[in-house]
Image (cartoon, rainbow, N blue to C red; front, side, top):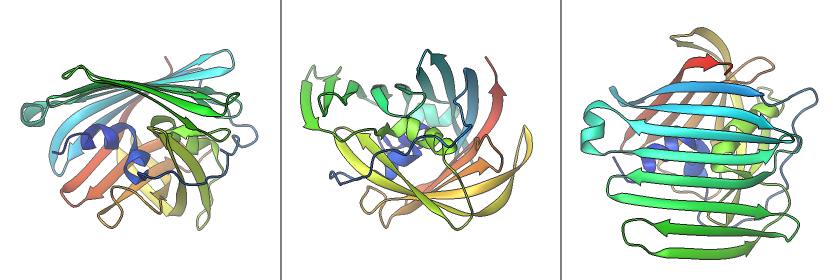
Length: 256
């Protein structure tokens, strides 16, 4: 498995469609009327690569005043862990009312690669600030760039989409920022589909995120299945790439 790819798919399906060049993107749309992010919630996913168990993904939502904190852990298991070890930690802090990301932290251990980074979005000053350290080489990086108002990050974007209206045949756009680049990601609601997991059968809306530029452009596709109800809970995600298909399915949903 390729460096950086496993964790990106597990936690940041939108990361794979984010381009390497900044683009103009409209500000993030606020959550739909009546929607609220969970006060406390833990989501657990199993991850498969082709037909092999590949890992687990655990996400936790925690409300703190007017902010929401989303943390995520990704770990490989079994034979995949012996071939290519991944142990990634992500944390995003964003505005509960507007959705704007304030800070996005990543601690990545992927094979021999170990990098910690913090991306801060200062909307008052109109800039994003990236601090990064390679724990293997000791190299550090500090970069600042202009930023437009109200953006989401790679981790939050997948779940922030739940706050938007979804109707078959319609699309909506999410401006996603990572490493100082902003890309408008189009979320197309393709159709209805029943998805079965260990938690039962779910009526879902199949959504495909796409972008005009990105590392999987012309090399693969990504789909996210959200429950067809007020929650729009992502119960399954799939990335079909040139080197194989990764699928992760929701196996636990706990209010704690």
